[in-house]
Length: 253
Image: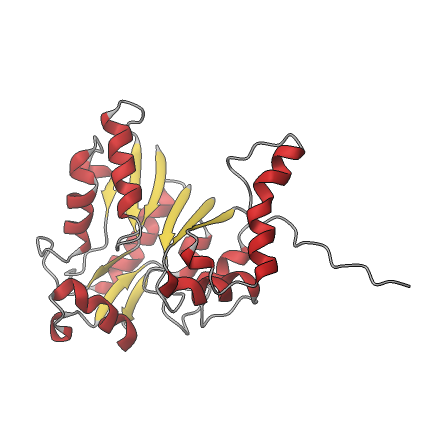
């Protein structure tokens, strides 16, 4: 099977719609795909409209031919969260690991619910949500911050980095600062998405708005990569954005 890690939230919705479109056009099948979702709130029933179980079945799974037994989502109502998280890691290993992990980020640069300060070697675990995350997610609960869960189960940064490939989706001006921190600065546990700098096969896909905090030179460099690939006769799709940094300008003698 092909083992796929999946995110929730508003960022991947267009991607999920495109996958559904491709399935209905007969271009792709999910019968041999196994999925592992990134996270789930603690305490929300599975059929709650804001649970990630409900999100995934509403926005993707019920529209494709994936086998229900191949869908894996953390149980936020498990009697023992520690056992649930350990079991999740073991299930991933039993399938030979995740081949492609799709991810989104928060405005503070967190991946899954690995918020600022999370260990970059962390595994699947219970996490108390930062107040900023609770406030940001209140829009999904009718704007009522009191209805937002304060805890969640989440894969760790180390879990994501173990995947063969990682693809991070980043859109919007509200995530531009996090993107700049990820690309232009070093690995930092206060911006957990920056850990993908250590991954040999990680790619960021972003829109124009998300690049607004980047230095002009940085943006020009990455935007120019496809053109340079074409000039060298190399394929443009699958472009590895982990290419070496642009060479420093030579000083005149």
